[in-house]
Structures are given as C-alpha cells and as structure tokens.
Length: 396
Image (cartoon, rainbow, N blue to C red; front, side, top):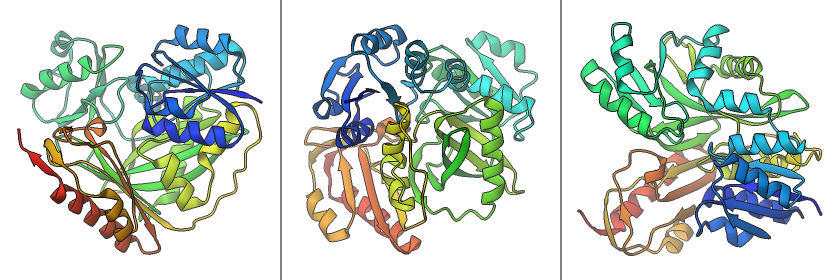
C-alpha cells in the first residue's frame, strides 16, 4: 500500500484525505492545529507546521512516504515541493514553487514576457521604502502581501495618504514580511482551474466569481459554467503564463480580470488545487472529473484519467454573515432538505461572527446544482438569506 502525505488537515483538505483513503492509500497528514478536522480521517497524523520545510521533510523521511500533496492552501506549497525534491518524488520544481509563492516575482516574469497589461509593480519590506517610490506610483493601486492568500490584507488604495496603512497591514500579514503594490485593474474577475499532466495543460474550467464591494476584495462564491464570452483568449493567456513561469505538472489555480476593452490581466496564481470547494465540489460536479483523485494519483506517479465533460450547473456561496455573537441557529438539515442544497458550516451557539473581510471570516459554504444557472444562483442566494435571517445573535 502506497503512503501519501497530505500537508494541511483543515476542512478543505479533509476532502483530499477522505478521497485518498477511499482510493486505498495509507494516508498521513500534518497540521499545526492540534484540533485539525482532517486528523480523524487519516491513518496517522502529527502536529507540525506545514510552513516549516525541514520539519515536514523530517516527518516524510521518517515515514518513507511515496507521495506528497497539498490542496486549497498556499501554505503547504513550498514544503510539498521541497519534500518532492529531496525524496525524488513527483512534484513541482522547488525553484518554480518559490517563484510562484512570491507575487512580486510572478509579476516581474509576466511583465518580462508581456503576458498582461499590468505596468507598475513594486515590492517593499517596510514603509520607509515608500519614500523612494512615492513619486513613481500612479493611483489607484492594489496592495497585498507578497505571499498572501485568501484575499487577506488585499486592498485598493486611491491616495498616498492611505498607502502607508495598507502597506503596513500587508507586510504584517506576510510570512516573508513583504508587500506588493501594483496597478489596480477594473474589470470582472474569473477563476481558472488547470491541471498539467505529461507536460500538457488541461483547462478544467473557467468559473464566474462573486466578490465583495471595494475597497476590500474577497470571494463570496463561484458558479460554473462561466458566462464569459472570450473563453479562448483567457485560456491562451493562462497557458502562456504557465509556460513562462516554468510550471510543468500538477494543479494550477489562477484568477484573472477581464477589462471593459476585453484585456486579460492575471490577478493571482497558485500551484495547487483551488480552495473554497473548487476542487472538491465545483469541478467534479460540473465536469464529471475526479480532480482530487487525479491529484492524488499523480502525486505518487500513478496514471491519471483526464477525460471530462460539461454536465451541470454548480453554484457556491460562502457563509459571509452579519456579525455578532450567536445565540441560536436554524435547522441546517431542514433547510438542506427543503431547498435541495448542501450546507457546510462551523457555527455553534457562542460562535462569534466577524465582519467579512477575507475568506477566513467565512463560516462555511452552500452548494447548489441543477440545469438552469439563474435558478441555481437564486436558490443559493435565497438559502444564504434564510440562514442569515434565522441566526439569533447579539450585535457586539
């Protein structure tokens, strides 16, 4: 029985752990959270920070794993690539993984090869750097941590007066202590999920994205199939970006903006399966493609099946709820049964719901599927309203 190591054992990784078990692998997992939900599904687990590359490698060597994989989080990407390199396992090149983890370096490469229209981009490690570049900056700009994820500390800035605070927040949210300042691009955002197998890039799907209002940009949900008209142009840009960045295997999650004049601008790239149920629910249901299973098989060098087809409409919504202290909850089971949706949540009496500013402030997901996009979207949105209205809370 082959042994596979899953880096990260949170809610989104639990689907990966359960699938690997279902496929007959011996599953080991690590997470810094001693109460990680995925631990109970694995054959063996340990409490280790997945950002600590040497500790992760030591664990992998001790257990002589046959493959290593992470999903739906950027934090395990470097450790997964490092383990694969040191143990000669399938995986993305470590130097490429390091490049992708730094948004400034990604932007530099994309600019060099003229992949999109982002012209100005700066990397800073402290706010005193702003004095050196302030005369060059043309507003509005986006500020974000160089190695961030989940929209944390990502913010539009329109004036020099607000720039210092935004950069301070981004730097403090960065593991490497750096922030990226780049052009703000106005447009409609889309997600693109791809899988690279035998050096060939497969587009698994383009997803419509639903976002919060500016100046905070955080995901509220997805739908598939996308209503985008210029799909081929997006696919061409995505494939070119993957090529120039040197990504040659595995899952790639990408976000792009389409401007009013139909230009494609890349917002973010991750060399891992998309989060927020993209890989575990949306792609498998909308394309009849075993995304997680193929990711697992490829991580141990087993063949994968890239056949897929469009089947149904899938819509998700994050549980971005009104803030307050939860006193009582509605019956989620009854809502699921009545509305024909699936609800995942982490709420209980006494939970504190924060103002929604990034993915980490969400309390779960709604998944709906069907044949008509508008009907499925309306059903999903209706369920979210029902949940929000029926949570009894104290506003703090």
